[in-house]
Length: 206
Image (cartoon, rainbow, N blue to C red; front, side):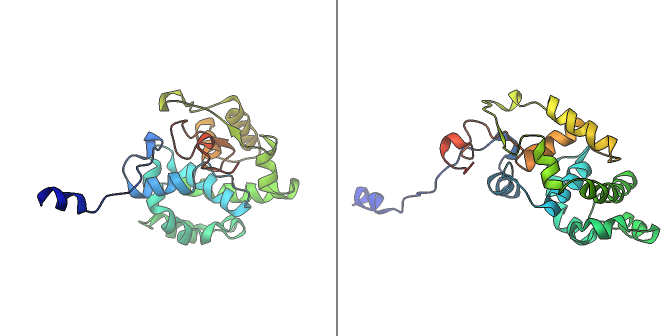
């Protein structure tokens, strides 16, 4: 009877997914890893948002910013560059007093400055998306890293993007930040080969 009852116990059919180790066991991090990271982004507003958030991450970890993202969206008018570019001292002080974001004066000033630079860039280029995707010939770079330690923090391409953005007046866009940005928005796909999101597992449509 005991043997029969054991056979009748519900079976856990949950699939254990292999993921890149950096997202750990945190549900928010895993959701971001599975649904967003390295998925190609072509929407100008979202690209601008991610550039600002990657700059805000400097010196911190991405999970901190990820958990503050909705606060950032509300505080920065859902990353409308036209509105951010027009922020005055009163708005700056409001942001400095907003506990929902990273209250770092230089990072807040950088967001305002970068919005102004973004608008100029978009006047010169067809779009922010076209400008960025030109750096990779409009096709994501697909890497095949086996371990986290193999993934670089900068590349010649991230250095080139960083240099060009700086020449256009952008700040908080060093080559490490720009590479993290490139990874996040899918210009580069750095999912490990063991990860279920790597194209070799037929999980991504590239």
